[in-house]
Image (tube, rainbow, N blue to C red):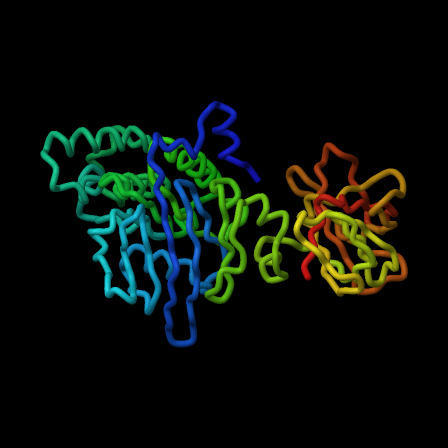
Length: 379
């Protein structure tokens, strides 16, 4: 997964340079719909938050409540100290008073307006000269120079997405909401737009909420992640902490973790925990957070991402004899499925970069290592 935040930081740019202004979003809302309940609470500073989850989990509903398109049943939404919604106080500002920009999944451009007119739609209160200057600047930022006279149907999908972003940014919102903006784009265009969007955040001074069901997209763009499931917030935190340390089995599966082992805790010393793995009858050691205490003999689930497993030349700590059962060759990786001698219903998947070794055929016997600092424990 490409980390565009790190890429920008390497060039001296930072997504958290606020110029003395800290935009803060606080959300604590509930909404009941037929057969569905939304109940979430989170807050962010000036940063990019990815809301990640499957279809129908409440991601887009959250965005609509923040934008003012849907009224929550109760709770509170505050942006930069300004109350947008408060159920107890009866406050519910209309969308146009919230200083929130929204980019829809289908872009929602006005087909009868040109590119320039679409971008200028939300800033008609400015003078003609100010409108022209702002549209020109945004078209340059979004690499749309020379297209201001075209209509949406004359643009590619990527160009339409850039117009939608420019239109949302024109009124200088304090918060930008992106509702699965890349779902209809091909991979190459999506990668380019992800990079451009992160670059744009160094120009745009507000916060961004980015709705997606794609873990790689979320990790590439955001600084924090909110993992949704069934209308609830399953996990919230820094992206690396969330991806490498899911708090629940449901969150882990939504984050793309494929490997799980059942076991019993045998010992804990500091932040090191030993777990006897069911079926393998051997212990593995995992590193947990400093404040996490797990009782001896407690059943747990060990998890590890497929990218973190390694094939080694000999047996060592956290290393097991395994046999290749299936192999899939990808562009840069070999994806292996491993079985274990005399153990049924236990399979692990590893994605190994091609430069780390030659292709292994089904039936090959190997030593498979589970790095202790990459294992996480679900209690």
